[in-house]
Length: 135
Image (cartoon, rainbow, N blue to C red; front, side):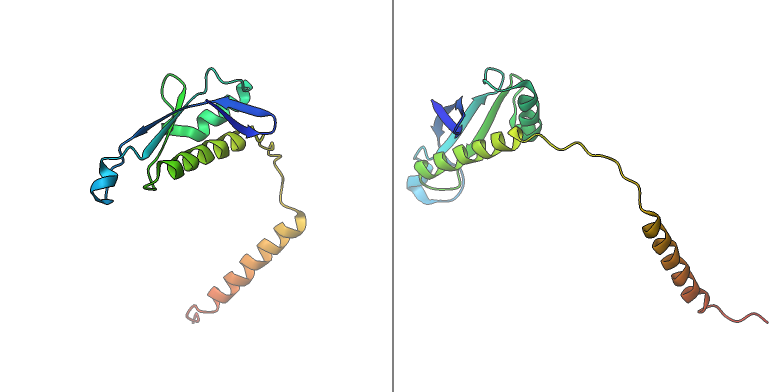
């Protein structure tokens, strides 16, 4: 099944329903309301850099075969769980599409260094004033 991530990108996903765990009464425990979404990252038509960022963001949800697995079982409704798991995948892919800015190291300004030292000296003077007087 194709899932539209944005106006330029569609990805192939596979969804299946399974039984939810936890509380919810007799009916919900026998109904296939949990949704498992599988996204094959290796076969996806994404640039390599995006695939690396997405794999990093996915963390333990990524299998050794390069398949991203997301599970939603928060709602009793399979429809709601399906919508939730798709939204989570779209958000992950959109985060991976953003190229992080490269950090440029900076040095503190002379003024900030001077203010820092003056503050430390003032604090030291306050503490020195607490000492017992010498004879």
